[in-house]
Image (cartoon, rainbow, N blue to C red; front, side):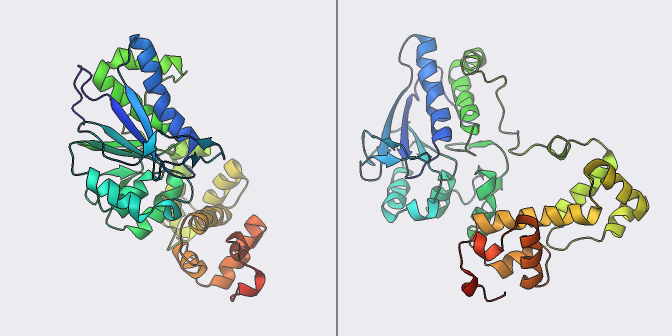
Length: 328
C-alpha cells in the first residue's frame, strides 16, 4: 500500500489525457480531489492536465478538453495518472512511451485508469506489478502481454504503482488514496457528497459473483454454470456436468429449464458465444483462433452458430465484407 503522509506531502496530480479517454473514468478520478479541497476548506490537492503535444484532447464522448501543457518533467512525489479509453493501441505513441519510461525513474507514483494500463504494459514498466484494466479489455491485454499479472479487481495498488479498471472504479481508487492521506472519516464525507454508498476496496472484483449475475441461488445450478465458464475452450458434455453434480442429465435439464427456460446445452452455447463476441470485439485474434478458443472445431460451424445468436456473422461484426469471408 502507498505510504501517504497526513501532512499533505503528496498532493499534486498530473492527469495525462490520451485521445479517446474515458470521460466517466476521468471525472470519477478528479472530482474527489475537488470535493476534498472543498471539505478541507483549503487547497490540499492540486492537479494539472497534460497531453502528448499540449493540444486539445478528445474524450470518449467527443468533447474537447483543453490541457495545461504538453507532457513534460514532473516533480518527485507527484501522482501521474494515464487516462485512456478507446483505440488505445492507435493512441499509444513512441513519444508517450519514451516519456513515461523516463519519468518512471523518478520518485513519483504512476497509475492508470481504464485502458491506460496498456501504455504501462507497452512501456515494459509493470511486468511484475499486479495491475488491472477494464474487463472488456482484459483478454486483449493478456493476449499481447502474456507475462503480466492482470487482476480482475476494480483497482490495484502496489508500492508506487496503481491502476483502476475504469468506469466508477476510479472514484474508489481516489477515495482510498484520500483515506490514507486524510483518514477514513474524511474520505467517507466525500463519498457521501457524490452519493457513493460504500468505498470499495482493492479486493472487490469488477464483475459480480455468479449468484448476483444470474439471479439464482440454487447451488447445483451455480456449480454447473461455474463448470461451464471454466471450460470454454474444451466444453464439457452436459452428462458429465450432471455426473459431477451427482444428479441425472434429466434432473440437470429440468433445473436449467426451470430457471432459464433453456437446456443446459443451449445455455452453454450462449455462454461460449458471448465469450467469442467479446474476443472478436476486443482482441486481434482472427475468427479461426476465436472459434478454437471457444470450443468450436471449425470456423464454418462457429460462424453459423454466431449468426443464429447475434443475427450477424463474425466477419461482418468485424467490419469485413462477405467477399472477404473466406470461410463462407
